[in-house]
Length: 112
Length: 114
Image 1 (tube, rainbow over the protein chains, first blue to last red):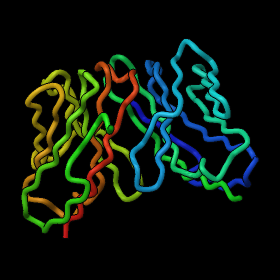
Image 2: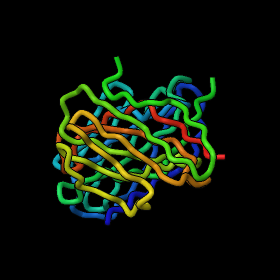
Image 3: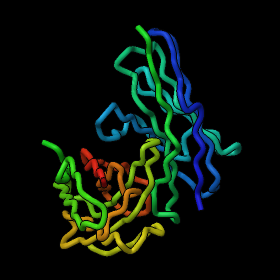
């Protein structure tokens, strides 16, 4: 079945710097890759997603890139702000698998 | 205005007890899920229902029994609670099955078994 590996597990940056979180997946049939942000004590919320027919997607300060050949995808946050501090999860799924498999999470801390 | 609502928010109980968590979504989605988030924050799928029909059961002990009376509701009943069941349980829904559509999570139920 699908396996999603996420790195790093913790990431600390200064306000204004960029942050990059990387994920790899094992199932070549995976075609949907969302990213979720979970603030302390709250529910995971979708921040951006990408499908396998697209290599890159951007939404303001957030961008996601996908390399299908290498089976990895990344989240890029530019001009980080303290409110970006949270746990970020990548995930992958396929039509056949029928379920979203999450990475282990990255705890991002943005220091003012 | 929460689209996926689950109750209770907190549940503290003793080992061996039986408890239930309820979930309702008003998004008109066809598919609902239960995820378990352990102390290390790992989110693991437990069950998935599509229009009241069980489609995914991820090797969860049979002490856990989901029930979906209609496509807007998915409840989780847990028998003979164990210490290792302590976690946050998230209900979620998505527009369609197949896994490749966004999940909308409820606010979670923090279960503590003492």
